[in-house]
Image (cartoon, rainbow, N blue to C red; front, side, top):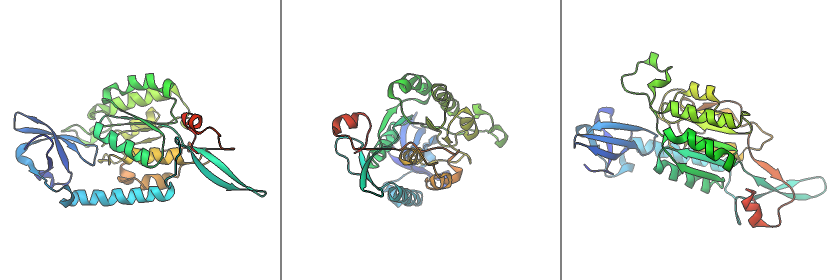
Length: 300
């Protein structure tokens, strides 16, 4: 086996597809989930190489869920035609005439502890025409980076995610202690920085957490949506799905909690949240200068 190989763990019944991130002393492998935000290690003897990732039952189930989630998302948020930036038109009938409004989706700042997941996330933001700024950064550096970036970028939505998990040999009664998690403390600290910057949860929407994260601590720190209520593995794109829904829900409406949570790949055990107002704004009339409008984050 070598770095980069796709593998499954025999002792877990091949439940998750991994890529070998690092080999240690030719006996131990550091593994990174290809679909789930999971970082693990395993003896090489417990690993089986997968030549065709689509042949594994676990991967097939994940891909079915991903396709269904994206289908639902596209039904609610149809792709738009963009000229020089994130601007889209929406027709509104009035008693006297048809008016063309323009729409301004909420701007996303996405911090991710995994570079591969970051790229996948940015591709989905682009596909759904959501203005987003993504940065790959270690989880421990997120609080300091947010402190500098929030006043500069002024986002409407912040996504704080990466790798997390319950540490080995922790009992169920230890799950209330944040020291039982790999990165939940870093995520909580980053959420607090965001809330120090903007205390109103409708003015700045915060989505935080990764696999098995301390859901309750993240909500208490000030996040609107967090993982993981059931301490389960969450799919890499679940936080992105929530962010897109928040960005494209009109500011006059509250995000439909059951719809948005059940629309994720991991479901209600993976992500939960509180009532939150959307960040999409409409305007009238359409800007004449599309380049300047694009720079102002206006969608024509």
